[in-house]
Length: 148
Image (cartoon, rainbow, N blue to C red; front, top):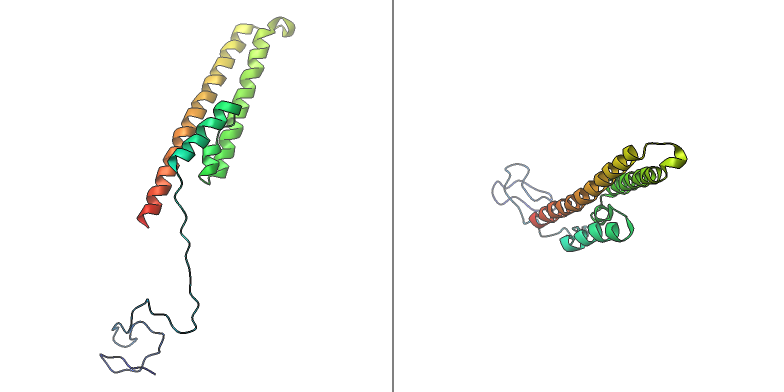
């Protein structure tokens, strides 16, 4: 068994520091023979351009918002945005149909037309917000990964 170079006490071979005086015995890089090697895989940073494309294109092409959040690994927030825009858009379509066909339902068309416009504006606001939110999440994630 080895001994501490400062105080002379007997130490265990695997010790990095002397338990008696605290003197550094060896570098942490040296491994004990037979000890398993631990490999830590760090997460990759994600491209902000790809996040922006995933946040914008699906929403513009097929009305699917929140995909940028899925790309960044925020599934719950992405689902909330996806269903939120679908509910707002569905309500707007229903109000628009009711406003156009007011004579069939006996309803006042102006109130439903205004409500349809407000629901569409809220949906558009949610869509624009989710683009910038996905970008902000991507920036924060990449900054935290670059610090490690």
